[in-house]
Length: 295
Image (cartoon, rainbow, N blue to C red; front, side, top):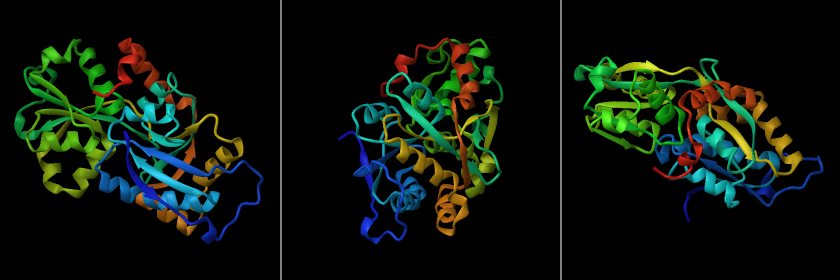
């Protein structure tokens, strides 16, 4: 199977809150998670939310961590998953593969519901400008990411570099946001890219990382990973899921699940949230089909 599973189960018989609304209850709900950080961190972050959703809907909930960002497309298309927390670029790509509806996105402790892409290096590398990057090695995250591919490619294009493969001595993909940050920190690459929330989290947790690293550029804001569901999921189920996410901060159990995610709540999400991303894509004149496969 293309997925590494992390099962989060809740016994429906033990659920204390029973729904009275009539709807076509699915046998289970499978939620896909893209590999933003390492698997152990993902397990901790989403476990409580999986249990909370299971209790609210009175069904079994499974959370799957995907090995690669692009696996999300096949997983939806083949019916392996019913929902997912989708990175902004992954959502845009998904629209051409499988109909998905975004229900909500998280609000972080600083009251933002967006993120930026960072391009960075070690302070002692002497790299400060695009000219300094020439002939150096570059680590990206995955072609299906905004911060870890789309933004750095656009940034280089805006500085006259149309072919990053020829400009850098070596370009490779780490597969995760934190993987790119660590690769630069330990010297496996000289320039890197990832999303700001992951970079800043590492800087807060590891003082040496903060001291040794420097941010060279940052992207416009784009939406945080939105919770998307299959468009053909029962309408009442979608409404229940949306209501659950938007009211998580109203209960002690919900706030605990939010804390594990590093969030304080959820807000409604819609197509208009992705306008900045569409502008990036238009500026690059991208053929989106090339992003639907693994790196």
